Image (cartoon, rainbow, N blue to C red; front, side, top):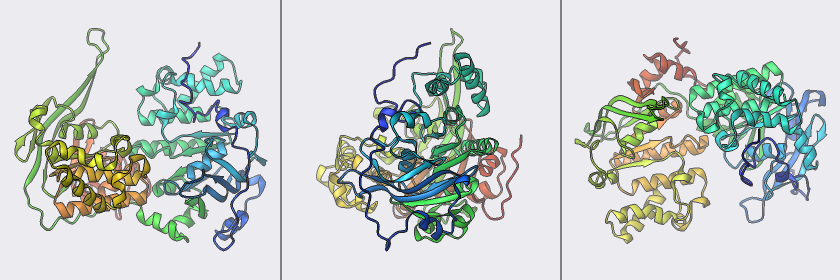
Length: 600
């Protein structure tokens, strides 16, 4: 059965049929000049870190002195510079570092998926003893999926939206001339069963957009396992997932790795994940390998200052309550009662209607200068709650008292004058910032629309950029010129332009590295203590919630199942669902708290 055609270049990172993208990857040019005063190379790096160079029989993947050059004019000459490490057979190697450290570029170089703008300039990558640097496109294509396979960070963009799940798994096998149409279909269903997707027969016919984030990631794992590769590369596969889904995906990868004896290279910026699954660790900073060793050695006795900084920046789960603001008045800013929002799709006449209670009878109150954390899994209703509070959509019933005025039933025209007082910080700062506008225009267009003189708005915009840690030159630049953390700072500055009484932060730090995450959390805490603004902090990361929230509400299937201070939620949870969430957090538990067994 023929499949719809794919748009040119739309799926450049697919596992199969990618040879055109990497035709130039093997061409070599002179690498960087070696300076023994600043770095060690090859086996010297391994020996200096306390790791013995593995014998060829023990090694599934060996990278030696790998350098990947960047185009001229970039902030540094090499994306990856003289990186060396070994992935032993049957083990999990975690590569950790901040954005821009070269983790994903290293993985793309191994897969032969480097863009045409960058290329391997020196070094070697040995797969089962064969150097794949310089191999032809056809030979590289024959290795992908069969010898080494990859799970990408964002499964929605990596999967073809025009093809069913089953067809995409079968395509991996068809590209390598494996099996018959009947055997491929049987194998695809077996793989969907193996990755623990519900109703594999039904899933086989589903399109990616109909699946949840965790389900799409399981489909990516099934595709990666289709040809039983010896090596699996997982590039941040759990970053955007909630804690319970993350725990399930980690357990799945670990179980499959042990059962099949695979070698896994796991890329992450989360030391909690490292503590859960890693046998050995490589730490990268600005394209260089600064430390490597066993997971226990790197986590408990890090030798490099950069590794110590990364570990110190990790938000640990704490059972301590936050120190309240000294000048905070006990005045109600927001009071929500019996808020209801139900999503309906399909047709009742055709028997296809689907009813989902996104927010179901939610009640809480928030006083001035305090932060309420809203936590829960994907689909729990927390983001829908945030959109209702800022009136980006209308509720079905209930009341939202903002400064003693019920805004739930107000029309857009009636609510317009109140909108500046309730502002939102969005999860994806790049998508929420207009790419065609300068930062200055992004900051000033709202206040000017509400009557503030342009000159005053510009002056205050520059002051806020400085306040959130950006230089004055940022005012005239465009969003694409900034890193993820810097864009989030711009989003915070935009929200503060109106001097709001209530800030709603929807997953504001979920996609950021731990060090940038720590900076943003510190900034939000500082802003709250200086301005007295109240906050609703929506997150799926309970460790983050424990750091910044005065009170935490746990949502499940549209309802608040438990609410209380961090000391209660994390040390003495009352709800079985809360205990499941806490038990699923990768890494540390708060001191003195046993892992609760989840009630059935």
